[in-house]
Amino acid sequence: MREQVLAWLAENVPPSRVNHILRVEQMATELAVHYQQDVTKAAISGLMHDLAKYFPPQKLLSMARIEGLEVDEVMEAAPHLLHADVSAIIARDTFGVEDEEVLQAIANHTLGRPSMSLLSCIVFLADSLEPGRGDTPELENLRLVSRENIDRAVWKNCDYSLKFLIESHCLIHQRTIATRNWFLQKSKSKQPTLRYSE
Image (cartoon, rainbow, N blue to C red):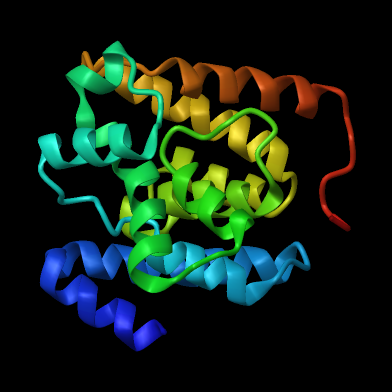
């Protein structure tokens, strides 16, 4: 299936974005190994996370509505926020992905989601922290935290994204805030997160 997805991406996504996707696939795989998760699921989720990244706004809105997804005012104004959810639809309908955890990991990679699975956390972080995103001290620290405490990493990554969105005068979706708050509370509860047995 990987070659089929890569061929599809070559026709629908610019080369620079394909390179990003491959780095996300790699980092998701590494984090899956680190947290003793299913490496194949992590790789598939990483490879398919941006399938709809370059779909036109009206196509994103139309596909989301046909699927019955909630499209709120922020998404209406910034349809690119729907590309994660629509990418999951493409993964299911075009490539036959049936694993709900994989589909959720694809759908959650941009805005996150409170109580999302470890696989979703892995893809969420890999998308933001893959090496091509830069090597600032803040990013390097987030990469370290992602291997020490994944709940804390999701919370801190949301903080990082929110700061960027505020400074860029962008709309902020409430799901990012809800994700941040949920993982902040979970992290503060000092639950061990290095090993999972889900």
